[in-house]
Length: 118
Image (tube, rainbow, N blue to C red; front, side, top):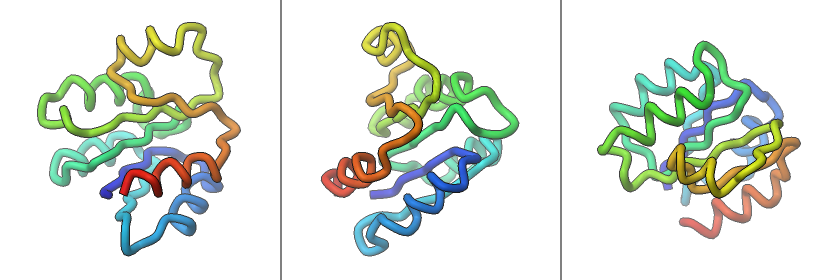
């Protein structure tokens, strides 16, 4: 599975990189949302994780730029947020997000989910 993670959270980045099996997953880490957007257009990922903590672009704007581009129809989009989402199902539908992960992130839960997707 090809995974893109956009976050400036060093703990989250480090844990994902260290715990995902390199034989089953390729993970690209970006703190800069604009750099991720440029790169993502060249390499279609299977899954994109976008954190509220990303640089140079609002995370919701980044989610919408990815989700509304038809070439990413088969790409799962996950949102990692410190903010409470009052209507998670409505948010997911409106922004075409497959899953919302609350922060502080439960790294084990995320790793288990990603590992089961390979």
